[in-house]
Image (cartoon, rainbow, N blue to C red; front, side, top):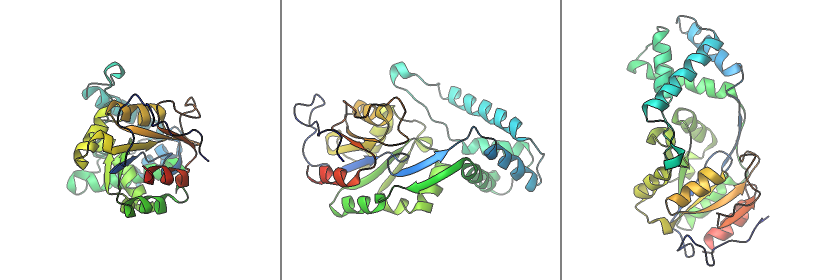
Length: 268
């Protein structure tokens, strides 16, 4: 049920009332319920087995974990590093790291090793995932918005080599008009630049878009930095220190309450 009333009257952001043209959505914790644990041994053991099964020079899981963390940290540093003071949050693509890993183990294959790297990345993701499902009603909800003339756009902090297969697996790719993923853009939320790019891609003004997400800092405040109003969903995988209701959102809901959200979006 609705946690707080919508905050459109007298809001300091400006033009928050009126019909929107585009709804931006976060993915994990907003449209998808997921549990992953990359800190467990299982995904790293998978990579060790994958390398061995493909005739590569064997590395144990612990060595791969350390190597991968080092390469990822280097990639972030090469992009200038996080700069929270100025709202900059770069996001490297991990697929080249997988390609590099397989290459140094003697596995290259066709296309510079990209096909093997995608297979390894997807296997790693599956090995780290204990739960993956679309929230009940998510696909129907997106269909209702599109039928009403709203465009549905994903704006997600994610790695494309993990997320695009998950979207296809769950049937969400066909329910979205555009997919904007941080690893493909080189920038992640809460950097407002990711939202600005989505706005430019949709050729829409900030007042004609609204963001729906389950992370107050990344989704609500990040969108606000680009002039986009936000709806906050407090779900089981929201950050633990997030409030029950976000004072910066035009609407806060408990859980993936698509019925109330649909009423709110279509009544604007």
